[in-house]
Picture 1 (cartoon, rainbow, N blue to C red):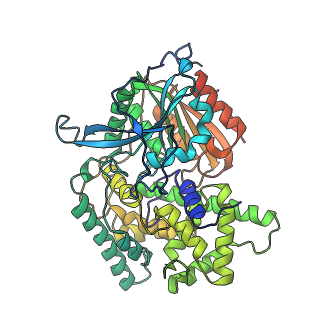
Picture 2 (cartoon, rainbow, N blue to C red):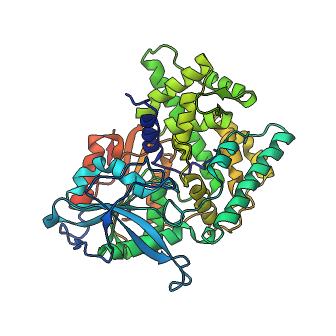
Picture 3 (spheres, rainbow, N blue to C red):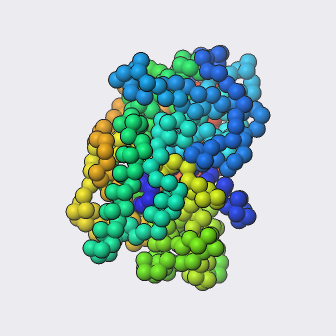
Length: 511
């Protein structure tokens, strides 16, 4: 879907909380036979200091994390083909373990995107990992190309606002020319403003960075918690460094076997499934004014002709923004209520404020009008990874299948396939190689109601990692991801693995 290829992010609900709060809308088999054998002193080579507030590029809310948080930078090669050449600095953040006598090491998080700032995100999620903090330093980072780690910047905030007002699901030749011109302008801006880093922001290079980070933290093995796109990164790391894998969890799993077209189609079906579950839930509660899919599709048709007014500085809610706003609210069952408010507002009052706020949360736009570099990094990393380049003819050939998969999300998802068209850098792979023979067991969690990373991807990832490596666990729930769902069964299973090395039994399921 435009503007973002929703290649899986755990950040939507966190960003949504920031946006809504800022606008006053708040509501509502052991691995090695003995615990701690991979413990590390933590006396790595990094120089930690007090953290300042996350920057606009990181998507911060202007507030520094508490005193316990420490930040540092790690120099890594811009080009691993020239390891002694130019360096870039990776931005890091950590919260030290509470029980130093039983410390296992560092637990490194990637929250997804691609394009999400770990430095800005981890403090907001840390409460969910408080038990893990008992024996781990909680660590995250801005991957290369993201935030303050040589972050990719393409267009200005004003240009991004302007492009969001365009119709990127063209219905005629004139609209198609406008959409293609907009896409070309974006690609040209990326080429102009970020040419030096674009070839080097691949997931493979970020996996190499992870191993440098592991060493700098003083850990013999990488203990890792990857969410959403972070699961793809974790799989690639395991393939490159199987003997360095410690205790690793992959939650909300990207299917490593699909190309962007099939992945986009699968994701379209996932969001349609989540939308259907939301509509059923709303109707079952007997609430007045629950939307229906027909009313939603009617609304989108109306927006295609005439965007809705908002109270946000003259901005209007377009069809694309509404589609992405609806998607943003489906990342968590906790945000379904905002979707109801937004749809009722649009259908009943003819205004688009709440749906526009939901869109902003997904696009990385702060209430003050500044964008993080989420959009730019998302596209740059996606296009550096995947070698496929789709044409208008490809979109048209598959448009009917996308529309059939979802009358709400299908068209936007199909046209977003043009995101890497004319990209100045060739992609690296048809699909990532995540085979990890010889790695320690990796817990792979699939959620049956996940909109952004459909459940089937977990089984594909577990199989690709290899027998005895990928340990599939099922969560029968809603939303994107499982561990942060609050499900006690899932929390126990993951905590027992990360804290005590107890690998979940094959077939473990929580609901």
